Length: 164
Length: 369
Image (cartoon, rainbow over all chains, first blue to last red; front, side):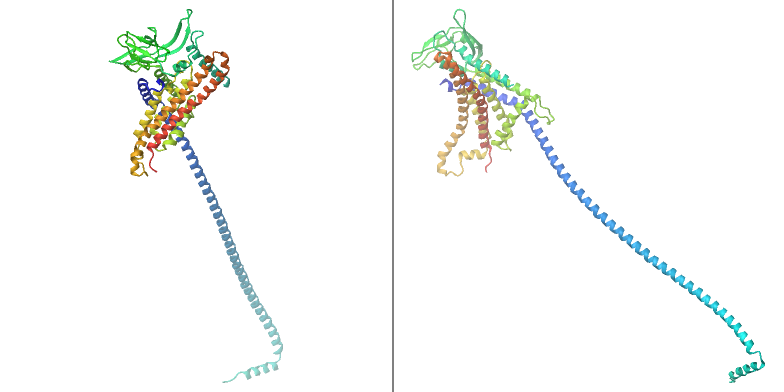
């Protein structure tokens, strides 16, 4: 029976010791331990969060880079296309210009040739005229060598002249 | 490492087994009072008896630590328990069933001690017994530093020093893993936090109760373990003392009742879903429920620890009951087995006490779903 009879003295001392112990341990043990543990857990959580965030950022950056690359490629293609177009246009214009120039040269040449030709023709005409004159002179000299012939001529002329 | 542990364990068992042999030794040929020996070991005492031995003249000599006796009886009286036990010869009495018993009386002090209870002596300096063998003398209030109170102080100090050593290794940067003793303490603290407090009280409210739960857990555990150490300053059956478990159970009850929210009280005085005419039955049942829960806590710890001590001592007692050393071949391995089991029980009972306390507190602070 003694075994299960609570003893006032021990109850008093147990209660007192336990409560004092609880306050002492809370102040000197549990608080520092819990603070350290919580801090460590927070640190780990922060590190994990940071890693997650960094990963997400990396992914974002990577997508951005890919986009940038794609854009750059498109731009390059466009530039090449434009350059080609420009060069084509330049070549075309050069070509047409050259054609025009060539035409002009040809035209000039033609004009010059024409002029030369005209000049030559004119000269030839003059020469021919001179020669013809000479021939005519010689013929005339021969024709009009006699008085008879001169008279005949004068008569024909006189016939032509109308006295109106 | 294993070898050293094993050696330590074997020595521990050897010493444990020798302790009751020494302190229970009696005169040659006289049968050993095994029951008396067991009761002597599991009960509280005003002195710490370490061993008895016969000297050269065959006189019984006692080696014990005399603890202070503190009585409140018209003022505080403090004296050494030596004055009760060792100043006068025991007074022999005959119990009503014909057995022999004795008590100590110190007429100078005016107190006598019978079965570890202190009584005021009558005018003749003696104790008076009634027909059933109970003392009828008045008792002073006894606040003595008994064996169990000493263990209480000692274990509290030991726990504080051990934990202090563990806390010292913590750096404030919160980055270092636990080192040294903290490597052993921290998982247990986290176990109490995550598996006991958070699990039963809930994430939102567990913090407030952590000091109580942690202190209860570690205090019960260290005292359970100290109870397994066979020699001074261990070996006292503090966690198997009903007064100790009663106090802790009452503390759990007070924490539960004072942290109970309106849902908790409504469940007791206006249980939802119960017709009003049943309330006269329900309310007393629920009110009794407030007390039965901590009562179960009290009995569970007391019975488990005391039973363990009784089993170990009984197994050792087999040798003396049968009076043959050959029985040690049976009793020592079995004691060893129970002792190892008790190492587990020491942790388990601390866990169960804390766990159920957390469960009761959790029930009292839970929000209605």
